[in-house]
Image (cartoon, rainbow, N blue to C red):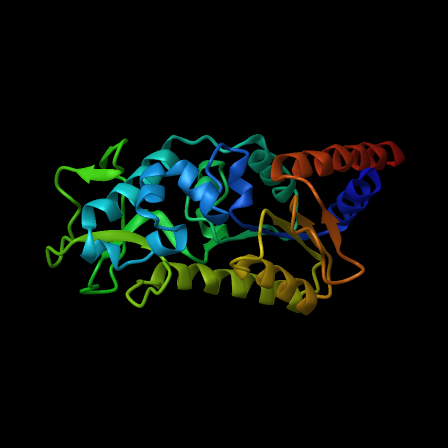
Length: 288
């Protein structure tokens, strides 16, 4: 592992730009629940276990019509949890490293929790490909409008995980509103915000390619069950002929010999790289 950390740190030290890609495993060390498999989901939401509802079944927009209080109980609880969660130090370490890149950084994440923004990453440097729980849209939708959920307070019964009181409404048509998250079987998702983020990332990558900047892709906590992040990491690394550093305690296999797989959790992996990154920096300073 030490040699792998050294190699990863060396790649980062020689890079001019950094693309951080992150899946659900990135937030586990912050204390956020792991929804991998029914057991993890049901452990966090016992009422769903009693009903026999899996995460993929619950994360479906149909619930806002079938049982809106259950739907908003689930997403309201998650919204409250994410607001209260403090990003673990691995986020700050990544920001420290990313901020040293001469050609900048970008974040591509499937997470909807807003942890990167809470840790201080620039909003304009993040693509949330599945949307964000901190923004709302109409369930219809009556328009493509997306608005912030900063004023929304959802009272959730902790025993039943059902929402109490008035449910949030669309200011334009009065219908029920919902989080601006891409769910399973979701044909009503308003994706304009995420599409704008995607355009910014695509433009940044195009500039890097045109100016021949040295890019490294650092992926954290991205599994295979919904491989959106892994595929994006591999696509960018292949297109830019660069290295992929993959941190994942289980799915750490990498597609190419020049890539690096670290079989550890997010915080441990990031901190391991950081230690070697600092050593390399000190050595470079001594030589100067």
